[in-house]
Length: 445
Image 1 (cartoon, one colour):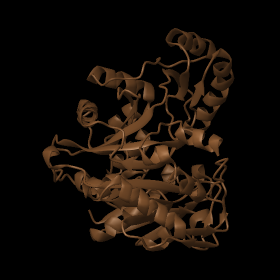
Image 2 (cartoon, helix red, strand yellow; image 1 turned 180 degrees about the vertical axis):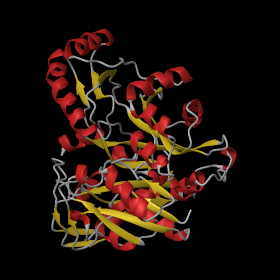
Image 3 (cartoon, one colour; image 1 turned 90 degrees about the vertical axis):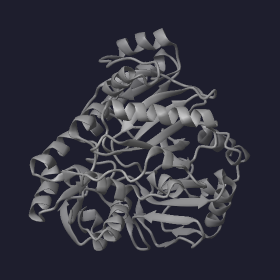
């Protein structure tokens, strides 16, 4: 490979450009008119404006992206995460143009992109799955199934992601109220209104396992990430390794992720997500057939560059490590800095007047913005990922606290104050938290 087009924006585009530059590869960036002044546009070898700010007219415009790819005669396309990263039709169009897609095959993307199909596939593989339904077409069927498995339940979109189209329901009335609105959101965001019902696991942990497969039959896992600090079913803080798992469960969940990946003959980087109860029983949630937002904490604890691995696998190279050679070292925490109100979580787009990241040992910043940049209302409001590592979890938390003591961002609201509060919480410091933890400490506040 000599030239790669990045079908994404902001922070992840910068992240991919950084590795490509290290490898001596040229990069092609695409951007909407709203993003023309963002740093990644200047960092790429060449950049093309592909449309107006709404994603449907730019970052989801497959024809425009493929036109640029053809004009620039690129060797490969890296999708990043979000947007077209899990769109099987897009993968097939890329391949039809003789371009390499840096990710798994279109068939795997398609099979794992539908959560109902993914559940069935994992059951066939022998991976434990949360009790749930098949596709549900109307509210009456949803209510009947919910009563069969007993409340509380989670109503979910089959093609969903990022918490969209997902809602916890405690009784028939809540489910009846949620069904149509969740279905409509799913249709709007994913073009698919298929829904299903899943048993809700109380005091759950959200644990995911990083996997990488090559085209020679080799598949490894790079251990787990704990993603249980969430708001609106969306992650805001992740850490690796999980402070919750016993040694035996760590081994078992890694083996389950490999079982899932081998069953679908997975290639390139992906993630198997699990929900875990307080007794460490774990169940398959979904497989993300792309690079995850939180991949840096795996990079820091395992000592690899996952984007470099992705590119090498796409070129046909063999994974450089065997499973027995992979062991996590130290501890890493990622805090997602969002342009949003730290209490209501409502987005706070606008111009960043000043943005200062203090230089602290063990702190890595993956950012898509700088002082003077404008956070657009058209996209996810994440400003940066603050990745903090240490020889122990205690040291990593101490460095997180030091960071927020001298960090500053003016011009818009942000969730920095939320992290400053969270880091002081005794239960967080002891690793005693679940997916409902953040809402509980906000109520306490």
